[in-house]
Length: 243
Ligand code: SAM
Image (tube, rainbow, N blue to C red; front, side, top):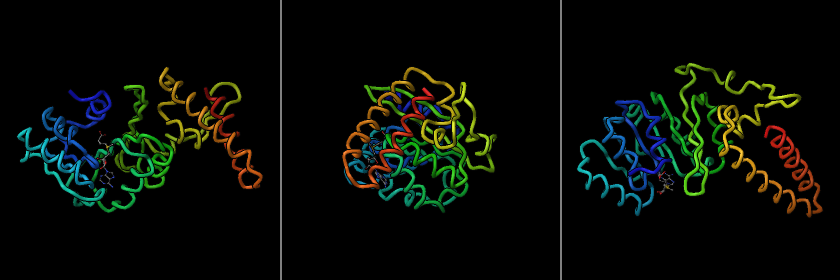
C-alpha cells in the first residue's frame, strides 16, 4: 500500500499520462501510477546505484518492464524532450528539485504538469517556478509519521487557467496585515488560504527554528550578522501576523 504522501502525489496525475519520476528510489510511484491507469507509460530515473537497483527489481517483480523504463542518470538527463507529459520529483530538498529543473530546462518543453514534493526549501522551489513561467495550480499539505509535507503542482504559464500575477498578487489578510509576494512564496499561495491545523503546526515549528537562528547569530559582533538577525526577526514578526 502506498504511503499517504505518495498517494496524494498519485492523485494529482491526470488519467492516461506519460510520466517520469525523478529520484524514484523503489519506483513505488510509477508502479502505482501504471497499475491505477493514471499513467500509460513511465520512466523511473535514479542517479544512485542502490536505489537504481531497487527500482529495477521492483519494476521487474511487478511485471511492468514494458510500461516502465528504469534509467540511471542525473535529474532530467533520463528523458528526452517531448517524451513525457508529467514529471514527479518527490522526497528531496526544494533547492535540489529547483536545480534539477534548472539543469534540465530544455527537457521541460512539452511537459504539462510538474508534481513536486520538497521536504524543505519550498520557497526556493516556488521562486524558481515563478521565475521560469510555471504557475502553481494546486498545493497540498499533509502530515505523516510526525513529518509535514507539501505537494506543489505547477503548469506552464501558457496552459494555465490562472496567471502567476493572480497567484502571487499581494492581498490584505485581516486588519492591517498584508500577504506579500514574499510571504506567499514562503507559506504557499493556496495553503495560506486554507489554514488547517497542520498549517499552524508547521509554521509554529518554523518560527521556533527561526527564533533559534536569531539567537545564535545575534551573539556575533559582525554587522552583517546583526543585519541578518534583524531581517529574520522581521520575517518572524510577519509570519506571526499571518498566523
Ligand atoms: N521519490 C521517492 C519518494 O518520494 O519516496 C524517493 C525519495 S528519496 C528520499 C530521494 C531519491 O532521489 C534518492 O533515491 C536519490 O538517490 C535520488 N536522487 C537524488 N538526487 C538525484 C538526482 N540529481 N537525479 C536523480 N535522482 C536523484
